[in-house]
Amino acid sequence: MSPILPFLLLLAPPPPSAAMGAEAAAARAGEVRYIVRQGDTLFNLAARYFVRQTDYRAVQTLNHVADPYRLSIGKPLRIPRRLLRTEPVRGAVVAFRGSVSIAAGGRNAVAAIGSVVNEGAVLATTAGAFVTVELPDGSRFSLPSASRISVDRLRRTILTREVERAFDLKAGRSEWQVTPAKSSGDTFHVTTPVATAAVRGTGFRVTYEDALSTFGVVEGKVAVADATPAPGELVPAGRGIAVRPESRSPQVPLAPAPEVIRPGAVQKADAVSFRARPVPGATHYAFELATDAGFIDRIAERITPEPEARFDAVPNGTYFLRASVTDANGIQGLADTFSFDRRLNKVSLDDPAAGGFGGRKAYRFRWQGGGEGPAQYRFILARDAAALDRVIDQAGLRVQDISVTDLKPGTYYWQVWSIRFDKGRSVETVTPPQKLQIGSGA
Image (cartoon, rainbow, N blue to C red; front, top):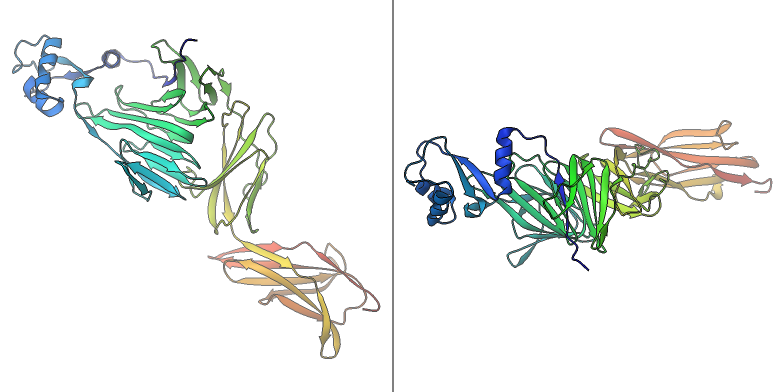
């Protein structure tokens, strides 16, 4: 069997101008094109920009320069990239949650805001952890739960200021937002064991799990090809492919985002929960939470075969929900983002207790409340479940119980409103009505 070549994703560039065409041709040849300025000589160029001082000789021969001390201003020089000196650049952790490690130089450190991410570093997230790294040009990548990536190349060519960035996703998932390249020499690669993504200004996702790598293009256009120089197949935004060691899927449309039911409702219960309408063909549903709409600071995610998710222990605040599905190819689809408020305000009813009060028969109604900030309660006792025929309607209660005397035999319904105040806002929660039957002998 012939070896399987990795697949390459290339962002489709705009039609080049003549000048850009010359630069691109030089780039394809492994060269850069430098225009001589006043004061330049091959010797001082070598001292400032070449790996070795003696490398000027190769440039002299390639460009047919008679005198290395005399260069004509405006003359284009072809310089092999392999001769040019580079310097490392670095990224930084801008957000993280949970246990995130950064291994570099034989040492393993725990991530913190501002942690440096250099060439050679390996980042890993444990279950339930997240990290976002920002590069000097504003490009970002995020790793969700249980993912690992190595930074194989992160450096700048001193002469041209072109930046090379190469990453190897070893396991899990990743999300990328790449700032458009400033020159044809800037490169950005994301590799998995079975595929490679080379991009120039786009938003995309890359995954690698169980020998399957997927690419979902959210912004921009990419051309999909193997490792040969042959032109590739154009993949526009909104489409994706799945690659295995022995095959790849044809490009497919990204699955539509699921319709989340009442996504902006205030989340008041013990757990934050969401439910979506089923999407035909979806194998899994992803619900992600973040503190920002760009999902730089993610706090939790649930990936489940059912169109619903529950998140425990979410503090009060304003958050963002992002929902998407995974198709039969394992490719994550398009996502919708919603904001919602989390304001814990729970109230539950205890069973009424019969007793006496001042020699009169009484019923004590009790409830339990919970949340942040002070609360007031409203107690309603009615002869019907709709609370239209009310016996008692008592608001402004600061306590969590009330005693009622002289109730006549019959059927009653009672319920409690909890009005909780937090940071200048009020949130109201009401219990379902609870039935109380009082017999003639009670």
